[in-house]
Length: 191
Image 1 (cartoon, rainbow, N blue to C red):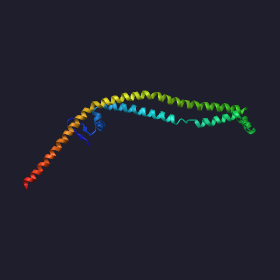
Image 2 (image 1 turned 60 degrees about the vertical axis):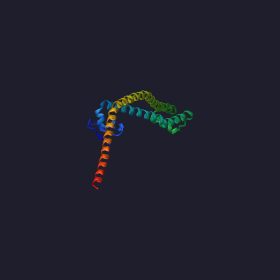
Image 3 (image 1 turned 135 degrees about the horizontal axis):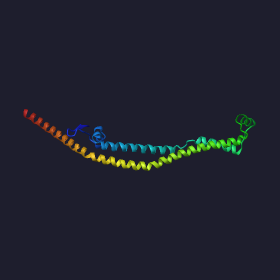
Image 4 (image 1 turned 30 degrees about the vertical axis):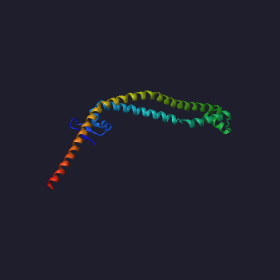
């Protein structure tokens, strides 16, 4: 239920949290609106960072399959390289590789290191995000307190409007009772 009070032209709602979220109230109290907007922005950033850390930690399977396959191939070559005559001839003719076992082993190790580095970089990103969390939490808490202070500044205005609204409702109720009583007395007199 929204009523407009003639005194200050601000609408009235039954609950304070609904009233302070109205656009006209925010326009009338820019400090409150700014405090809420800044707090909301930091709160969203904190939430996004927390979700990012959680997802990156929970689903850290980046490059795991490739690392496993390449490492298995490397271990196979290291333990028992088994290339046939055709594979050796092909490697010599088209790639200029004379020692195919050594060449593949070295190339696989280089590829593995690239993947390991990418995985470590991913873990570093998680740590960087975790380092941001305490700062964001502290900033969010500070801004929430400022928002509460601004909210507390405008609450007396709403409370005054609430008293006026209740007084008007009571006056209207009393008038209805009086009108009903007068209507009954008029009917009795006519009989």
